[in-house]
Amino acid sequence: MQGSRIALLATAVALSGTVVLESLQRQRDVDVMAAAAANFLASLSSEQREQATFGFDSEERSRHHFIPPEVFERHGLVYHAMTSEQKVRALDLLRSGLSQQGYLTAQQIMEVEGILGVIVEGEGRQFARDQDAYWVSVFGTPTAGATWGWRWEGHHLSLHFTLVDGAMTISTPTFLGANPATVPSGPRRGLRAMKAQEDAAREFLASLDTEQREVAIFDDVAPANVVTGAELVVDPLDPIGIPGSALSLAQQGQLMAVIDSYVSIMAGDIAALRREAVSDGGLNDTYFAWAGPTERGEVAYYRVQGPYFLIEFDNTQEDPNHIHAAFRDFDGDLGRDLLREHVVRSHTPFQLADLNVD
View 1 (cartoon, rainbow, N blue to C red):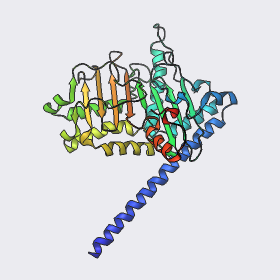
View 2: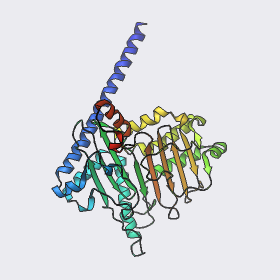
View 3: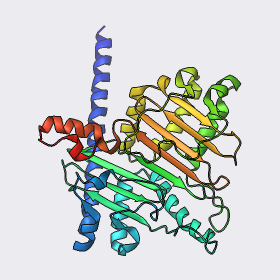
View 4: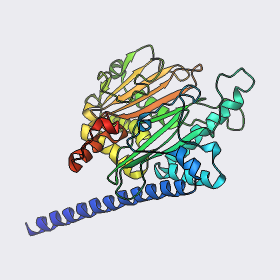
């Protein structure tokens, strides 16, 4: 009996230590992000700072899209207008929100944008393709304990980070894309910026037996794009496809690999929050749905939907060789969930609508 008590006490101490370490790590991540944003802003001229900064309650914070800038005008400071030092500091800010793999993915998405410009040069292209056409925007003042955020956005890359009272949020919406999905020629031939997000889903689909596949594949025709587009607020879609409750443990592990291909691109604290959202909802109530043919080289769409989050992926354009993907949080996009708590705690006179969180 005494031994059991000691073992339980040791376990409790270990768990308590883990929680403390995780809390300290999250605070370090927040401090690194705030310092990176402050260093970036400090490097700007007054004119550049005016372009790059907005009030936290600005309507600009809720504007987002993944389409070319000729179609959706971007605001902020564009990367190609920065000096070499400013570019380094901007990339430090980008790196602060992403894992090593996520930073590589973002770099490859932007690189592919430049490669597309070379591929279509002289073919009467509709849009300019520039791997430096990405805009950085900071909302509020990036200091310890503050409520602020920032955005990195251009064609096929829209990343949003929000901190409330100095606490990190799930930092969605996240949009990723790649055109070409597989670089067809040149020195970077074979590069696949979003390899993990496609391959994990195909491996999961291949693990299903015939009966399970019939449930998972909801349509022979893939939708033309991600269903939710760039809507400001996303509500749960119809729970179609195969639920986690119908999977074996091994298959549930493969479904988690699909989810983690989106979660793991974020910095550790944000990734942990996203994993908590998945865990809180439970895999049993998480659905995987596929539309379109299952052979490589054919148009394809899939989504993974849990009680609190939605992942969408499509590769339906350019024969197809053009990916769009999104990770959305039903209640936490742009920090809406923590902002509600902030309003309640602070008893401030403004309403949520003033913060553009609904």
